[in-house]
Image 1 (cartoon, rainbow, N blue to C red):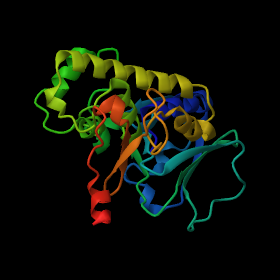
Image 2: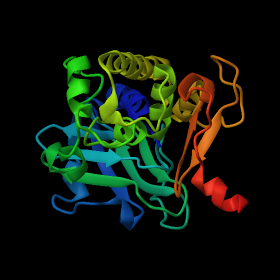
Image 3: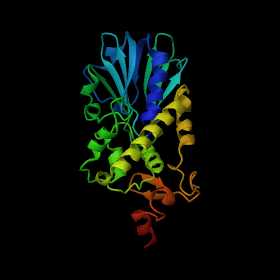
Image 4: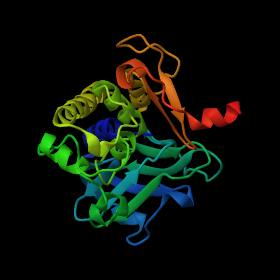
Length: 287
């Protein structure tokens, strides 16, 4: 799933390629992608893109005098820039194409989604706050006013584990499965540690890891073409998705805990005092 750093890079890429250009056609290909109907997608046609914004993992195209075109790429969605766009209207079918947006220049972008779980979402709204997912967002961890005290206040009284708290978009926006693993590895903390139990020193350590991990990932992604961002994300990850490999810090073997629809990765030496975490799904398989 694209997370804050990739969506931030997409925002910068689209601002460079869309701002000042007119949207001439919006062509929904998959019915499931469109989550709003009034105003219709055609309401952005004939309008100039004046700015591109990021809200957590959401992208929003602002049009002059018109509505916003907002998208969330979900787990398997992506934005593919095309210059020029293929000729002729796209054909509905079983392929990954969900929506096409065309500019007056002949360029534009496709929104695509792999797999069978269709969660890619597009909203056309007069105000981004009308999108339920945006209205529920917590603070942006890279905002200027997001400091240690803000993080401490957010985690105070939290009963969940750190992994779950960091992924909660209503608590902190933009962090998902991959970067929560990376942040906790950098902070040398167990993903199962109760979020509300952190000391002042641990809050400071988690804050530094949160800001540095996301900032470094944004810098790595900046200036990279949209089509290469997925590969850049994977190459920069130190523990997430690297089960069985050596930890780049201590050399221990990276372990995994599996859930019904996701998994987390961690280093026992760096994060859990050398003790592997219980993987209940694996335990059931061994019985």
